[in-house]
Image (tube, rainbow, N blue to C red; front, top):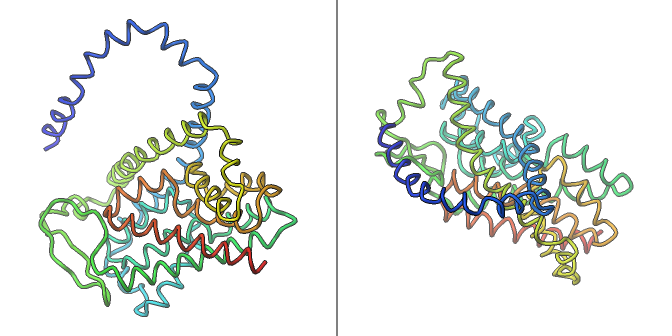
Length: 344
C-alpha cells in the first residue's frame, strides 16, 4: 500500500523535472525577485503566522495522542451529558479547562468524535474553546485596559454563538459529519438523535491495535502533526500573500459604513488568520477607527473561522457540513455584534 502511494506521488513529481532547465535559465531574475522587499515581507509574515500557530497545533496533536492512549469510547459516552442543553453548556465552558488555540482544537475534537463524542458537543467545543478560556480573556483585557466591556462582549458573544450553533447541529444534523476512510462502515447508536459511523474491525486496526508504548505515541502524534500542518502551511502562505500585496489602507477604505465596517472587520479576521491569544492586540489598533460592534465581530469570528482553520475543518469534516457551519457562524456573529453595538 505504501509503495503504491509513493509511486503515485512520483508520477506527479516527474513532470516537475522539465521545469528545472526553465528555472536555471531564469535564475538571475528569480534571485532578484526573491530578494525584493515585498517578498521579504511576505516571508516574514508567513514565518510569523506559522511559528505563532505551530506550538498550539503541536499541543493539540500531543493531547490527541494521549486521548488515543487513555480515553476509551466507553469513557467518552459515559461522560457525555444525555441532555443536549447540558451537553452544549458543558462544551461551551470546556475551554476554561483546556485552553487550546483553534489550530490545536481540531485534532483533539476529531479524536474525541472518533471515540463517540456527538457532533453538536464537538462543534460547540471547537467554536467556544479558542475564545472562552483564561489565556484569551487575560490577553483581551491587556489589549483593551480601559474598555473591559469589549472583553465581556467577546466572551459572551462567543459562548452564545457556539451554544446556538451546537443546538442547530443537534436539531438538523443526523449524519456523522466526519470525513471517514473509504472502508465499509456500520452505524452505531451513540447518543439520542446521533449515529456514529464506525469502521469495521479490519478498517481500524491501525487506530486501536497499537502497542501502548512511547514509540507508538510519537508515531501517532507525528502522523497527526504532518496531516494537519500541511493545511496550516497553505493557509499561512496565502494569508501572507494577501497581507503583503494588499495594503491595509485600501482595506480600511472599504469599511467606511454602518454595515461595511462589520463586513470589513470580519473579512479582515478571516484573512489575517491570527491566533486567538494575539488577535486582540491587532484589534486594539482599530479601536479609534471602528465602533464596539465591528471590533467584537473581529474578535469573535477570527478564532471560530479563518482561512487556515477552514482548510483544517475541510480536512476533518464533510464539505457540505463546513459550508453550513461557516454560514451559521458568519450570520450569528454579525447579528450578535450588531446587537451588542446597539445595546452598549
